[in-house]
Length: 255
Image 1 (tube, helix red, strand yellow):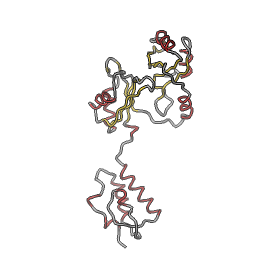
Image 2 (spheres, one colour):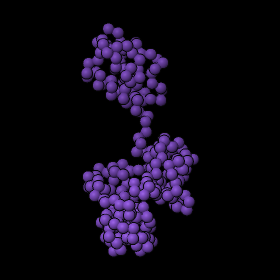
Image 3 (tube, helix red, strand yellow):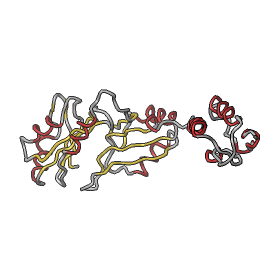
Image 4 (cartoon, rainbow, N blue to C red):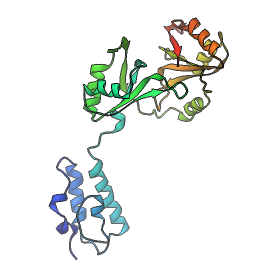
């Protein structure tokens, strides 16, 4: 029986930048004497004629090939940036342009309110590489765009001791409305319940929520309060914009 390695085309072997260890292991596996029938290697970009692999060997080779193909792909978590306190006028294209000055941008997205269509003053930018992401943080975090000091940091990984189901339940219980305010510069200790009770002093609050860093229990430093009327929104803004809540001066405007 012929060895698969003798049938591999050198023109289609992976580039040297891939894991040398994984390639060596793959080569050893492919050089084994294997029974005939069906192609496997070329499914992963390796040229070989048809061979039948038993299930155990197929799984072994598949695992090594997958390692080869993904070895150098940086995790999106390490490349995805949170961008906070951006002006409402900044759109996806402008956000891309701002960050592209400090590295290659893969994707940029400003978050918008589904009712008003207005920017929620934050977004996410995924850079091409981890180095690009770190460079963007170093150069842009704390800088100003149209007079607003922006916050730029890596989106955080889920914490193992956080009950995410409770956070998801809190999110799903929020009653949205066209009559809503954005509340910025919140203290990290402020909860959704605190926010609701604070604004209830000046209007009929339908719901309130503190935004969390995706996948964690950490406050993003802002939140939303929904009301039943435009009058309640105006009253909340006039009464609470620049007011103190748990030691910090909050910003309140229409969401």
